[in-house]
Amino acid sequence: MRTDFQHLLIQQDGGVLTITMNRPEVLNAINETLLAELAQAVEAAAQDEAVRCVVLTGAGRAFGSGQDLRSLDEGRAGGATGKVSEHLQKYHRVVLTIRTMPKPVLAAVRGVAAGISCNIALACDMRIVADDARFIEAFARIGLVPDGGGGYFLPRLVGVGKAMELAMLADEVSGPEAERIGLVNKCVPQAEFEVVIAELAQRLAKGPTRAYGLIKKLIYTSAESDFETSLRLEGELQDIAIETEDHQNAVAAFLQKRPPEYRGR
Ligand code: LHQ
Image (cartoon, rainbow, N blue to C red):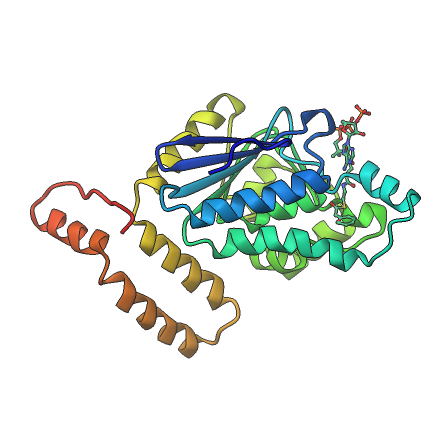
């Protein structure tokens, strides 16, 4: 796994790979370099069997402030042409890789998560946030629509009515409120944040990774399937899960009254 990035910090602890977006002076605003590096890092993490859980976070006081508006403006002033939808494809590569990689991805959010940074956090499988977290679907503030998958994730997480409110008003949602409306999984005091993240990430990294990958497929596909299609997929995935070493060892461990040890195989 490459670690010499300009705007990312990469740290591996056992099966947990932490990717930290690192431009704290601009609240980790995403410029071209950060975006390209993020795509490379998540793709490498997806491929690497030694990585069994990914944590995505931001350096300093924020998770991220969205697209770097300065570099966007400079690009325009410099005569950059091309549709924004082409630029968005680079973000789509990131969110698609997060959703499809067959292992859990946690967003660890401290401080602000605005614009497309907010939606990258929503792409992750779970979100654990500190109580200073601020989620802002900032797009409408600058006359844009939610991108990076926001229009897809928002109604699925919080329902259509709330999604509309968050996208149109673009008001801040605090960490505790985000937990209350289901935008995040858990909001914890800042003093406990790092320990809670580390414990959950290590727990997931020591879990039945193959089953986790199949669970992602089952849950994420369900939003697009009818009930019968989902039941069919459930059967196909269970056929795979039941053949895994982790499943067979866990059943043996249960019968022998000892804790299971998952190897991700
Ligand atoms: C920033 C940024 C930033 C550069 C803070 N860029 N410098 C859009 C267009 C095209 C294609 C792709 O898709 C997108 C998607 C998007 O993400 S659109 C949404 C873009 N983001 C925003 O509109 C948020 C802009 N930032 C803010 O509203 C505030 O900075 C927030 C609410 C995030 C944080 O406020 P504060 O905590 O008060 O911090 P601050 O405003 O003082 O920011 C600290 C520094 O970071 C500051 O620099 P300075 O040199 O003055 O200290 C800001 O200029 C810089 N910064 N966001 N997106």
